[in-house]
Image (cartoon, rainbow, N blue to C red; front, side, top):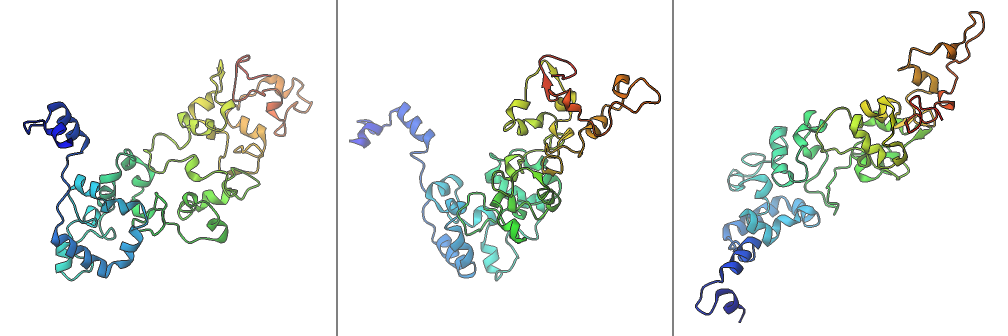
Amino acid sequence: MWKQRIWGSRGFAAPALLACLLASGALHAQPEPNPRDARTARLCANCHRDKFAASEHNAHAVLGDEDWQARTGKSLACENCHGDTAAHIRGGGGRRNVFGFRAEPVTERNARCLACHRKDHRGFERSPHALAGLACTNCHEQHAGHAATTLLRPPPGPPDVESLAGRSRVCFECHSEQFALFDLNEHHRLREGVLECTSCHDPHAAATRSLLGGFKQQACIGCHTDKGGPFVFEHPASRIEGCTACHAPHGSPNRHLLAHERVAELCISCHAEIPQFHIGFSPTAPSRFSLDTQCTNCHSQIHGSNFHPRFLR
């Protein structure tokens, strides 16, 4: 009965229904099993049994699905990433005649990964990681035995690094200087498990301006919503340089994560021309204000104000 509904009483498909089925892939033919591919898979497994066993439990297991094979036309999962393996087998194995993701140029390695993952990482070639000459395999392990979808390659590190979330732990190998700042008395709660590096940074995004500066401060406002405005009177540093003009996001001795320990030092780094009444009008009397003065005692609405252009309370 269902065949008659699709093909009609005279053996011809209803045009609208047939078009829908073709568009949805319902009538796509599955690739016929190829005896050569089955034999090649056995030969691959004889030498790379550990890779086959691990890949069965990670995100790349999809390469062996029938619908994926129908879409790519490759019935051998290995060939999606490593290319034609026939010459590799004929040559007796080794690193010859196969794409092994080791000696090949970084750009070619990344191109292999982006052939499938470009939809999710469109700007990767312009990211800081790509511009620094890193390959996807510096951070990801394509044959990882765990089920995590990101297949991160956690590097060995000190015990306190091992306690971090997986996404943050893999960053430690290159960014140990930033991790040291998290040991300061005031820091974002990375080691406590509240945040991860990827809570603020996108490792695959294109590098536009400085990290978290300018309009990228929106990464900060996602949590600090009360500082985002819009305000009638904007603090120029906030809109031009961003939150990092004043704050050290990884860690600081200052309880507000300021880039300077004393508030006045931070303010004077931009506002060097101090009004006379701040200093005093007597040439012999001490200055009314010093570096120990809390500028925010008066300029309390420092992120922006709807009432005063000098951010007075």
